[in-house]
Length: 264
Image (spheres, one colour):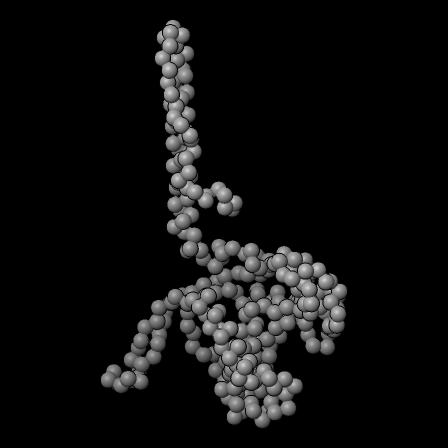
């Protein structure tokens, strides 16, 4: 919406006032004057109705402006098609399920690998233009597209790295010869922690949790958080399916060493 339409809701719609002048000609034509007065009354009533409608719209907009649901949220910062970002109601908190309930293992690692399959995707030049991104010195791949990462995959990547660091007794020996050991250094871990901190604050979860006694009610440790809340979630299958169609699969693409588009 054009901001100019509602910058000043108290701006006067009329300057001055409507004046009525008495004159001989007017007295000689009572019928015409009556018609004129009725027209003026009708105009005033119409104007008042218009003002009431405008004020009602402005008040409603102000009251609901900060209460948008995710499905109503503006999409000016995204180029994803509307059918890709779908929302659904889900339980706020579910019990651990297979395979995420597993201890460190090959099966759990394969589940994480599949979850991160589309971490690197193709972004077209026109999509970057739509986002207002600077294409100078950005990494390009064969075909002229650009390499990109959806934020959710970046955070999942961070979470997976921290998960492996927590279980370093298991992963340390297996990652001893990794090509990118810096991914498990303190600097990268601090980056991941702060990236997720910022995201959690931006998308603050407002579900209510209660505390349930699970053992001796006098024990300070015999308590668990519980929630029966229902929350609105992105449909992961739809989003992940879109990303997988654009995935940059290792061995199936190549980098353009020098950017072909130097536009700022």
